Image (cartoon, rainbow, N blue to C red; front, side, top):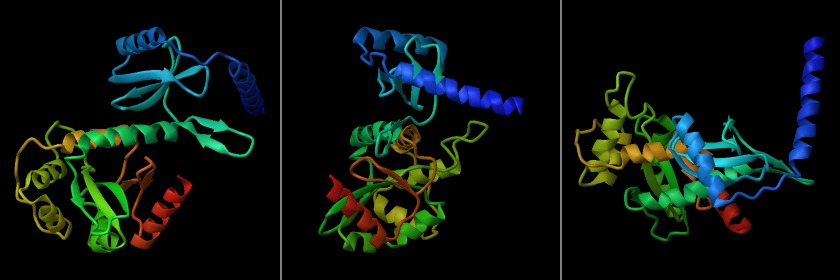
Length: 255
């Protein structure tokens, strides 16, 4: 009973605090951004890219190479999680909105590093984080012609599910295989063969695989396949060609 009352008291207190904080000024000057960034950088092992105001007045949004966080304006508290806005008719996922912007902007740096299967009569584009050891990635790729026939261009980015290195700091086999494919003189052919079960001839070059993997982790990818739509929406998992087309068309209608 004591624990239950304590819990109710805590929830009630949080509602009061939230109401009070809603009246706080949410502006953040460049000087304040720099000070918060400096404070956080000196105390935590995160590579901070930017600090800006968040929809919740008491917190600022902190974009790092390790992901998106929220922090108090004095830099003394750090929160990892999703921030929702509760309106009169709906609930807004502010964290997902911010991540969508990061995805759209971040994908630009990899525009020349993707393995692309273009549709002849292109109507839509999707970006897919993939791995050759992933069963559903293989299933999706076996239907690549069907996606293309529906006007969907598929652009692949590398995401070794085992990570770049193992626990001993050695390059994982998954990373080495994907690097070899991206280093191949005919990467489309090499990727298709690998997804059909062929062994991968090892190649070494300056590849984007590690950078693509790190970017994927930053913007919320934790499994494959992971599909990013033109509006920045991230959809984990496999989708049938017809179902994917329906989603893309609904996104176009909304925009």
